Length: 363
Image (cartoon, helix red, strand yellow):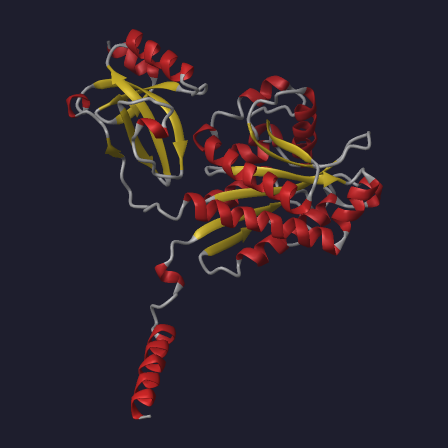
């Protein structure tokens, strides 16, 4: 009996140490993952009002519920662009995310259409592939007309001009791969868990995504103009289901792509030939990711001579290297034929990125 009591006492002591130690399970020992949730529209801007429902109210309700779900895990920090019915300028929404040094920016909206269209879609910043995507972005971007001095704030951006959209994509290109990853997770969960109609992941020119310096996604949760879908999104159950799905996707994204990453500040971390460190060099950027992948051909569609850099929390992967521009163009062609359609030539001097023009003028 004494042995049993002694054994139980030891177990009890271990439990007390585990749960009462100031360092056990503390948030200080976890990498904080910051999510900025942006409820679209607000205040004098109601968004679309299909069937008498208010996009601004539904978006806010879903955003707040997503935040409550994520806040159950102490490794998440949730920041909102708005928590009540107020108007927030588009550029201020991005500014909130940048100042929070967010890992992810999620903007929540509801769609509309003169037909009986329905279904859920997620968007990342990019050139719209068709007129429908342009119309969606034009509708969301048009709220800048409600802002004072919008011409100066948005550098002459015209929501009605397809040409203006081209300028949007440049600032977000470093985060495009990650934006697509999380958008795809969100979309898949909507379809598999909630059986929503899949309107897929698309690219379009949303100005609210332009100025964010992190992976960013805009969600069109459904069509208020569709009688059934509008009623669903306006219901407590619909909003609960949507918010849980979005939170689930964000959690999966964090677990899948951030769990094995250390965030120390380093630049070139592997694979760079020493002979080029103090000289001008060209490399082919083939991908960027939040995940640190081994530099093996099987991870990069058979390509070898690989290198990687870390910029903030993003790993950028490069194929081959040369100091000859003609050779670089051949390397670029090989990368694209291997499947990296968005590969680009990148120039460096002394390990610091420079423009291609600077490289060419130096040779």
